[in-house]
Image (cartoon, rainbow, N blue to C red; front, side):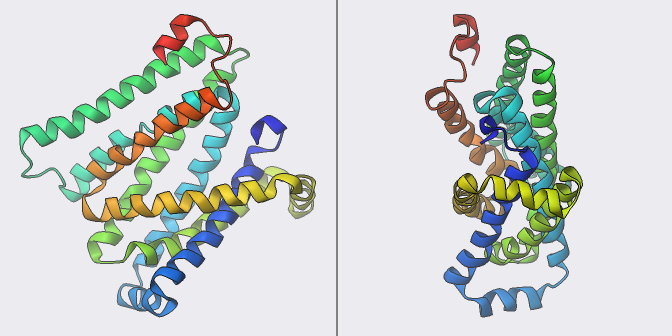
Length: 269
C-alpha cells in the first residue's frame, strides 16, 4: 500500500479499524459478551492497562508503515523484532520470569534473542548502504523505535495476565486504546477531519484490503496473547518473532525488494 502513495498514517488508521472489528467480534464469538463482562467486573483496573497497551501499539504500528516505505518489508521486519530483547529484559526485571531457570534455559532464551538482534543490526548496515537520499536511516530509526514501543507494550500485557484477566477480555479493551490513539494521530497528521475524510474516500479502492489485513493480524495476535499469559514475555515474544522469516520471504518473493542488489547484500540478508 505504501508503494501506491498512501499516507502511512492513513494506512495504519485503516488497519486499526480492521483490528477493532476483529477484536470486538472474535472474543464475543468465542466466549460470549457475558463472560467478557464478568472478567472486567472481576478486575476493572486492568482496563486502564489494556487501553495503555493499545495506545503504544498504535504508535508502533504507524512507525512500521514508515519503515516499510523507506527500507522495505524484508529489512524492516527483523529490525522491529529486536523487541525480543526488551521482552526478555522486562520479563526478568519486573516479573522474575527467569528466576530459578537453569543455565541451559537462560542461554537458550538470551542466545536466541542476541542472534536475532545481531541479524537485525546487519540488516540495518545493509539497508543504510543500499538506499539513497537519507531514507534508509529514517526507516531504520522508525523500525527500531517501533520495536522499543512494542517491547514496552508487553509490560501491561503480562501485568494483566498475572492478575487473572483472560486474553480475550484484555484485547477487547486493548483496541479502544488503539482506535483512540490512531484517530488522534491521523487527525493531527492530516490537519483535521475534512482532509482525513477526503483521503480515506480517495483510497476507497484499497480500504477493504487494509481492513482485512488488520482483521487477519488479530488471529495471529491471539496466539501471542496466550503465549504471554502462559510462558511469559521473556520466552513468548522471542518465539513469536520468528514471524520475521515470513516478512523476509514475502519481501523477497512478492515484492522483489533485493532485486538488483549485489550478491554480498543477498548473502548478508
